[in-house]
Length: 327
Image 1 (cartoon, rainbow, N blue to C red):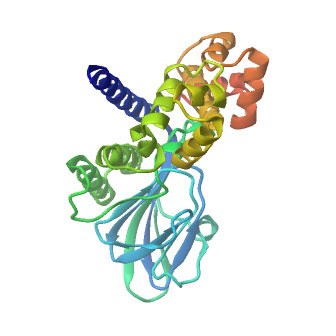
Image 2 (image 1 turned 60 degrees about the horizontal axis):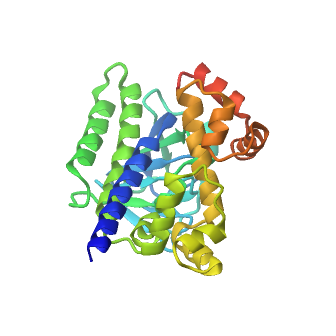
């Protein structure tokens, strides 16, 4: 029994460490926001690369997210965060035709405060919509951890006070007319997304039955995640991981994929590249050191894998981050 207690303490400690590591890994390069004033009928299809959010300040609308079976109705005071790059539709009613959001903006330039109008002559809905560019790109850990949609209801108890405070600050800045308001709202939007992620994790860590949080609670897959995050540089195979958690190779691969949403070695590749991008941004380590830390046998193998996933070489990535000041 004592051994079991020790293992549980160790596992819980690692769960906390993995979540803390996730929150620290969230980095955005840039963000932008818009303030549409929309009169029914209206509808937009939105396809972006990076986390997005929508705050409903007046009226009602519906959101449909790729990967979610049914549309979700949103009312004044609600806000939603889409942590991944999932395409979605926002419109006044589930059957209203939609147009591409960004194609529409080309012909209807928002003002300096991001405000624009669209739609017909029906009931009005006012939103604040924002999008962020993730620093981690395709290696972003949020891809494996979070659901397609996080919904906080207006006046509900599901959101932490900090979230509501940030939303209030966003509205205050938008209505202030002060110089620099747009820049402040942009920074607050980053904070809003990070707070939403933290609130979701805190609320679901003890109850999640699927996804990354569900995997952390699973005795076998949770142990595999601990092994991968503890020693990402080790040349893991599916067979070795399965053996370490006392499952057959096929059973382990199937269970891991079901809970996490991707196969073990793909998850490991993204974990390794996330580590590599962080080191490329934050220091001057030689590529050989970074390659070894990320589990690659040589610099050429690292460079090839990095470019395949990131679209640029490690050197180009490091240089670009220095130029835009994101190190």
